[in-house]
Length: 433
Image (spheres, one colour):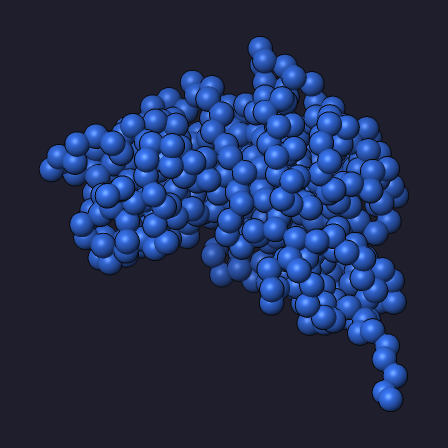
């Protein structure tokens, strides 16, 4: 009887892609995927560590897995495992803690004789990692919009961020491999999402240059029949004129720009060690809006960064208000051990952080409603998702369909009205006999 595995992924699209690659590697070793953790002999928890809540979720998942399936061998990997393996090794049921540095070796590690050891730690220097682990994510919530990780790691030194220390240096999937994967996906899917830890740095690995992201996208358009490509988050200064112009010119690229902002105050950006100031960011966003008047434009924004005064927050809020954002991902600052920001003496009280978060979320709600209202009585191209779920427009709006359509289709719909969370297709006119 084949051994059965179950993988639970936490956090970002890159983690989901790593989990998909691990599943494929285990299948090649003769493992069979279990539909539930309670049915598996090997449980892999692929963790995130971007916030304290992410760490807490991972620890609780370990306890739950052991409680529900005490006979299973639990292997914890991912970013939390890389950052703090000792914490995880102490938890009940954990056989191995494997960092991102050794994630590619997991099938061999799991095949070892199950001795009575507990909490073996296998973690190395992630900055020496050159292997690229990735497979398209073709399951989960977006079965009709596979996520393909093409870049990993980050060379930035943002003072609040733990990711470079757990993901390593920026490294890119080979261009030919990306083309082959997208070509294969295009046989089954209409839309593919390209993602990475720092996607805009694709192709610029020191000593292994492959060109720039825009050149790769041109290849994908020229050499594959994919109907729609969507870019996930790209740092603002990597949205070059050439990339924005290609996005605007090609009907096969989703009109969707997501550029992390973090703060609309230059003093805070400087303390964060971000590599741009608000004038640079504004230039890129206004260029995107001029080229793509109907595009979705989103950002990650943080509230309560150490030292953020009331005046600095108001400066940030005012900047956000005047920018053409159509949605925001608002995060409350969370201290990450080992980062410079966590050592700052001027931490903002948590209740203040949360109040500021609510203010920006409310602003985002107003902006998103105004954006949605622009499309009443207009037509949008949408990709249909699983039955019961709204379709998703090229410009990142949820659209309730007037009648069921098969999943995984690109269709054009006329918008009838605004709903609480999105839009609704106009019902076809009919005349009663």
